Each structure stands twice: as C-alpha cells, then as structure tokens.
Length: 191
Length: 165
Image 1 (spheres, each protein chain N blue to C red):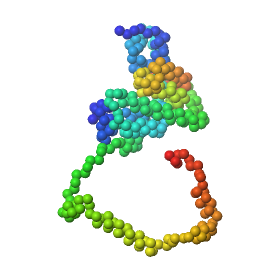
Image 2: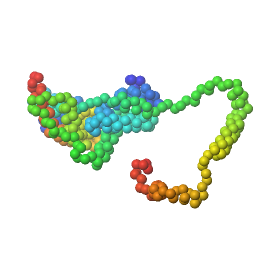
Image 3: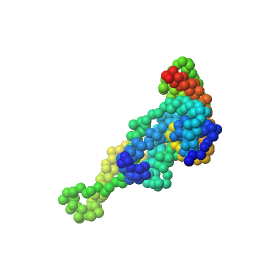
Image 4: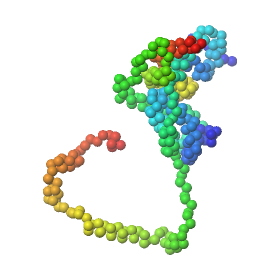
C-alpha cells in the first residue's frame, strides 16, 4: 500500500479502504497544510482549508480519472483556490488595524534574532504580499512546484508567474531587509 | 546542448525563482548553471538571492495536528455494507417463518392493539381538557405580556439568512 501510486490509492479510497486514506494523508496532508499556512498565515485556518480539501477527495474519489492529472497538483490547485476564496472574503471584512504588524519592536543591530521571532516576521511579511504574489511564492518557492505547474494552478501564463514571483520577492526583500542583514552578519561572525 | 543565456536573463531568473537551481525553469537551468560557472557577476547575483532564500526558510512549519488527522479519518468513505451472514435461527423462528413467510400478521395487529390501550389509559388519567373559544380568551387574556409574545411569534420576521439555509 505504501508504494501504491496516488491513482491506485484514490481508487481504493473510493472503495472505502481506510488504509488507503491513511497513506494518502501521510503522503499529502502535510504539504497541503504547509501551502495553506503560507497563504493564510495561521495554522488554524490552514488546517480548516486542508480538511476541506481532503473532504473533497473523500467525496469525489470515485469520480477521479487516473492519468488525467497529477493528483498532487490537483490537490494544490484545490487548496490554492480555497485559500484565495477565503482571503477574498476576509479582505472584505478584516479591519486594516488587525493586519500583522511587521515593524514593531525592531531588534537592536547586535541582537541575535530568535528563531521563532524571525519565523513570525517572515510569516507577517508574506501576509503583506498581494494574494496572487503570495500564492505564486507559496507554490513555487515553498512547495517546489515548477513554473508550469504554478501557472496551471493559478490559471495564468508562465511569464505572468515569473512576474508575480519577481514582484513578490522584491517586496519581501524590502520588508525583510533587517532580517536579511542580521542573517548576513551572523554568517560573517560564524565564518 | 544548452542554449546560452545573458547575464540579464540570469538576473531575472534568480530575481523570480531564487538561488536554488531546482526552482529555475527546467528549459533554462543548464544554461544558467553554465553561466554561473564562468561569470563572477552571476555568482554575486546568486549570493544576493541566497540571502533572501535563507530568511524565507525561517517561515514557520507545523505538522498537521492529530485532531485534523482524526477528523479526516472519521469522515472517510466506508465500504458498502455487506449483507450480514444469517445467524442460526431457533426452531421456533424457523417454524414461524415457514407458516408466515412475510412475517406474522399478529405482530402489527398486536402493536396496534397495544397503542390503542395505552391511548385510552393516558386519556383517562390526563388533566388535558378541551377548551372552547371563550375559555381560551379567558385563559390567555390575563396577561398582556402573553399576547405580545404570541404576536411576536406570529409576526413576519426577517430571519437571518444563515438560519434559513
């Protein structure tokens, strides 16, 4: 069962095979939660999205056509679209004052950034990106999907993906300049 | 053989995809790596991109919670319920089944009779009475608050949409 292809596992899921469900989750759930975490900015929302993605798998398993698409890419597409839908809804309701604050408490130059503080700052910087730039960076940079797969998921051209990535990384470079300098200094110190 | 790419194109690639060749477009990866081997400017661009990659790698990662896995396993599809293998039946049940293949008519008739008897018994001891219109008015007219409550219940209320769905 562990070596079975995704297509075979999905067929077994449709027959109600619990072990196939477990293997499919073992293989993909962590990556889908990670994608949703990059997009949504918190674990609770990420798990809600991932739950919805897998409930769709359970519901639609018998309609899955083997060989028509990569199952993993399809999961990413469903997850990315669910995230974008949620973010659009949130954008209409979230108060601007509730947006993550990136600039408060800048560390002193000689202060070594704690790992969790740096993680929080990177996450906050990602949340400041426009949604589609964030989606492109989540899919390409963090999930390691190719530019062609990312373009398919976001339903844009490869050139458009490259543009989204460039603009996103440029903004992140600006937002995380302090952190980047800190990392550079710590490397110089340890060298 | 890989086609060559310019330093300008190399800069655009690392600007978009970062420092790891694994993330670069597959059809340009070889040419970009070839340029990297001979160009100090390309290596400087790569170092700059690597710095941002290093910061981005600090983004938090959490494994899915046990609760999520448990919820999904609980909601998974189940196999179609097989027809249970017949348990050995007693001689009495075999006999009943032979006489009334579709079940004994005594069973529903018995249930109906029991229901009627229960209804009569409850009716005889209950304090529920049938009131006429004036009695209702007298009983309910004692309190204005009651009337307001009834009017409120009968009013055409705009229910929140999520209650209706």
